[in-house]
Image (cartoon, rainbow, N blue to C red; front, side, top):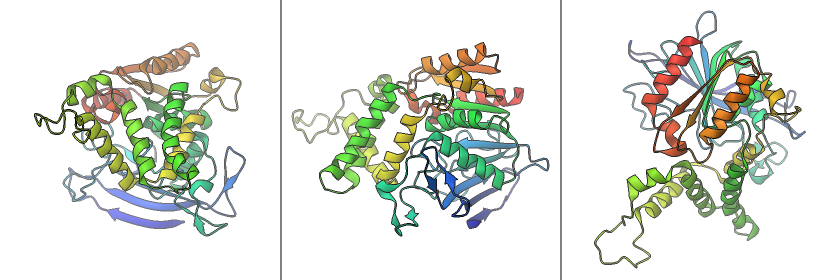
Length: 378
């Protein structure tokens, strides 16, 4: 069932058509079975597409966003959209994900707050927003919803499934859960299982939100702001912070070096990023998605990681980032080695950057070159 649809037609040879839709994929007669054992309905999915599906329906690419991302991965050139897509540097004419060649799909993940069913949605049992009552979900559930969207679009095969961070986790899970549709996968800076380091960082961030609830203060922006500030430290590298901020203050040479109101620039940056997220994201979605990250482990339901990886039929390009402190290059390379031992088609490439984990949103020259070359081979 189509709930909402916006069509933007192609206007010139240098632009590309886009489409924004919200569809209902699961309802009371066909609920989504969750890995937790619960059933969820209705499940609506917001997604955008770029380019045109080929007559053979074989040129599709599935893009999966990161933790606080959405379906808006790209904008048309010269459009009046002030909110350019979050992967604008990778999607477009002449770029690795070229809408002139591929039909690109990006949907908002299950549990998020940008049009797909999540904690901000209405619970049909209470007619109130789910909030903290939203059921636990996993990357397996997210992959199932992605597959349901492909079935709705009648797309039997994918050129690739690509994503960074949480998006990479879902890409790994998709290839294990549904080995047949994807000819290739490109997980960037996201592992086959969450490490204790990732879980620990996520838990500290969640506690910033949950402490308000425990203290009877409800949930407001303060907890989410602090959660984002904590996360931002792990998204960049110490080299990046040193080069960008050094030890500079907001008011340099003010003679107020011991004034707590005269913040360091790095402090100011973290507060700014925290405030920005509060203006656009839901704290309960943050809780839901970070828990899904923590529970992510492709060996779930299998004897071990090797058995899960052995299900993958797709060619794999796994990309690490040399300064990533969240999902380390070592972990990404280790999985590539495992896949090689299992006789799988796999390549490992490493992005060189001072920017840490966030390099998958910054280093477009390296990403375009590496990804375009891989897709050409596939």
